[in-house]
Image (cartoon, rainbow, N blue to C red; front, top):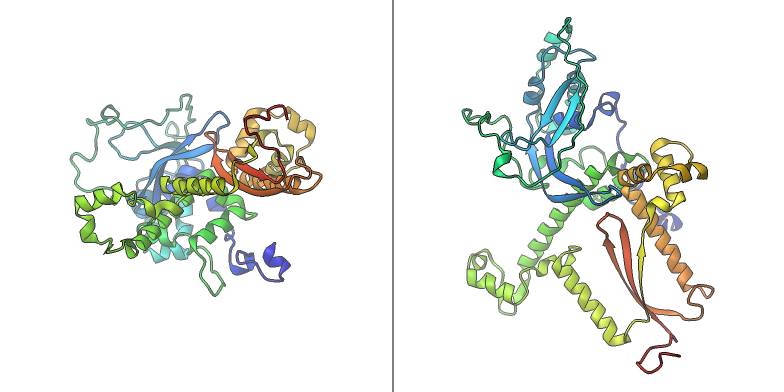
Length: 433
């Protein structure tokens, strides 16, 4: 709204190229595993439910595995038709007994999606090839009686993610034991290494701005668009991890160019010296570069110093408040979520009869809308606190400190310290007053 009030076009406007291309039918029909089969890389992430309301969070890091698309598609069964389906298990390593993802896929849909993606600029820039003769040779073949592989998947027990132990590895049936050629390249232990991951956010749109957008701007645009393809928990968590890695690399690069001590710089030779590194840790300088990374120890140490400085200058705060989100009790929020994802108007009687599971599912599927809605309510609450008719009356808020946290269930909440002018103070002797 700031740019619109000034009569300017917002930097993230659709006219600047911040929009998704039209999604073809062959891509819209894919499930999550079929999407990975036609991807240039498969990101392996441990996504877990945070608490009872089933919001999602990520555990550990992300491992990117480059995929040879032609080899992946050629591995699928040759006898395919419009209704043929097969079971596919996706594993982090073939030695592991437990699978990362288990779905029923349609091989024909996978090949049609791969054929379409071959014509896109991103796949052409990576020299991706696909054997079209493989599909044409078996296109007209159908399943005979007794040879139908359409299977109903009954996954009654969902295997819980756990740390990999030696017993989880199937050593007897390891196909790599006698095969020196791995089917795909080695995994990449980062989300920003390689050309594909760097270009993935930039090659899908033609930006008309004179200044190229940063990855942060691209993420902000994707999660706020009317097209909600970029607001899935998997996409948000992956983008957050990638952005975090970029910030870490930037902070490390800046720190290496700065002076740590008055007489010395950090150099590669110094870092190979154990005594030098131990001295950095002793003086609490080893992790100083992480002060701009939220939730890092250096960041909270900086915030602690800020609070202590306010207390020394303004005295003890008058009030301490905690503001928590209660998304599944907010009718307006659930109404917006239903309209966005189901394209219908939710009435209050329907809201009252909705189960907690249904509300939590809507909340976990679109955490961005929930966070923006909570931020809007907090801003309106601050306006209420500041007005003369508010709960503090004529006691004006002179200073405040606010800290944003995310609970174990995944919802945001604020811790607030308030310094009110003219507020009575307790000195140990005026308890009755």
